[in-house]
Length: 83
Image (cartoon, rainbow, N blue to C red; front, top):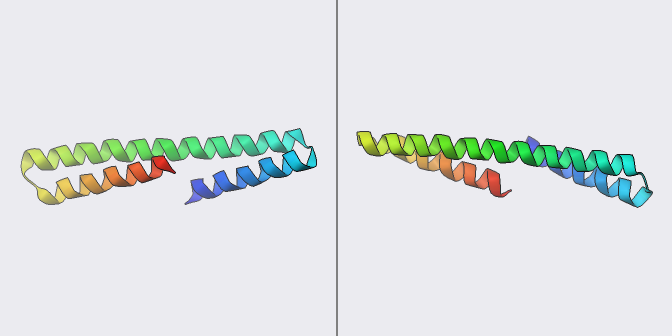
């Protein structure tokens, strides 16, 4: 949730900068938004990879619980990346 909040704060700061004619604030807001979005994307990709590994391990070993956890991690990563 923290990264999404930082994205939202960046959007607000960017908008305030645009409305008030403050290009520094506008740029700062855009940077905050883009940085938070990138962090969220990276976390999502990491969860997708972790989930794929767990899912594959579960399939190979026949451990349905591990496979299910892997599927859950992949779905979590998908949700994080889509925003």
